[in-house]
Length: 282
Ligand SMILES: NC(=O)c1ccc[n+]([C@@H]2O[C@H](COP(=O)([O-])OP(=O)(O)OC[C@H]3O[C@@H](n4cnc5c(N)ncnc54)[C@H](O)[C@@H]3O)[C@@H](O)[C@H]2O)c1
Image (tube, rainbow, N blue to C red):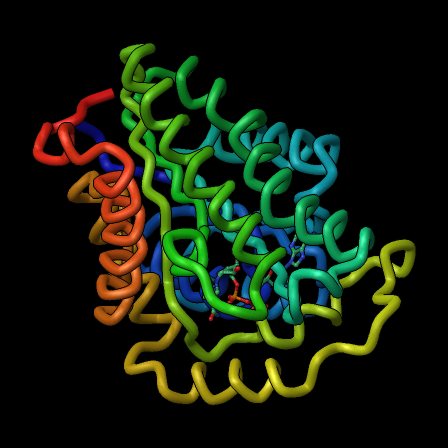
C-alpha cells in the first residue's frame, strides 16, 4: 500500500481546517488548500510551506459547484489527484428555530451541506478512477449527532452531513471502492466559527439581529473545551489511518448521543412493547 501523497482541505484559512492542513504537511503530504477568505488562506499556505509542503492555494466558495470542480481539476493537474479530502468549510448562526430567516437557511445549507456534496461530487469519482487507497473526511459536528436549543439551522445542516456521510460510506462499500469515509463531530472548541458572519455573502445578509445570549453561551463553551483545533486534527488523522468512521473528539458528546438514542428507543418501546428486545438490522 503506497503512502498518501496529497490532501485537499476546504476552509483551510482558519481553525480546524488550518490545523488539518498543517498536520498533513507535517506528515509529508502536498496540500491543496481552499477557503473563501484569500488573506487567511495565504497565511495557512505560508505556514504549510514552512513545514516543507508543496502547496496549492486557491480561493473558492464551496457552495459553488463550479468553483469546487475547478479546484479538483487544479489538484489533478498539480498533484495527479489527492488521496485525502477534507470537506471542512462551515459556518454557524444561532437563535430560536422560529427566528431563522430564509437567508439563514440558504447560507448555511449552501456552505455546510452543498459544500460537502460539491466536494464529494468533484473528488470522489476521481479517487475511484485512480483506484489507489483514498479517504474522505466530512466535518459535521456534535450538533449533527445530538441537538441543543438555539442551534436549529446549524444542527439541521450537520445532521444532514452525518446522514450524507453514512450513505456515502455505504455507497462506496457497495461499489467495492477503496475509499474510506469519516465524519468529524467536534463539540465547541475555540476557532473563528462564532464569527462566521465575516464570510456571509451580501446577497444573503442577515435580516434580524443576532441573539447575544446565545453568543455568550458559545464563547463560554469554546473557552471550556479541553482540546483545541490541533488536537482535533491529530485525532482525525489517527481516524483515517484506523479507518474509523465516527470521529468524536470531545468525551462528553457520548452522553448527549446516548440520551438522544435512549429517548428514541424509549418512545419506540412505548409504542411497540413486543419488539423492544429484538435486534433490528436494516
Ligand atoms: N469550532 C467549533 O466549535 C466547531 C464545532 C463543531 C464543528 N465545527 C465545524 O468545523 C468546521 C471548521 O470550522 P472552524 O470551527 O474551524 O471555524 P473557522 O471559522 O475558524 O473556519 C472555517 C473556515 O471556513 C471558511 N469558509 C466559510 N465559508 C466558506 C465558503 N463558502 N467556502 C469556502 N470556505 C468557507 C472560513 O473562511 C474559515 O476559514 C466547520 O464545518 C464547523 O461547522 C466547528
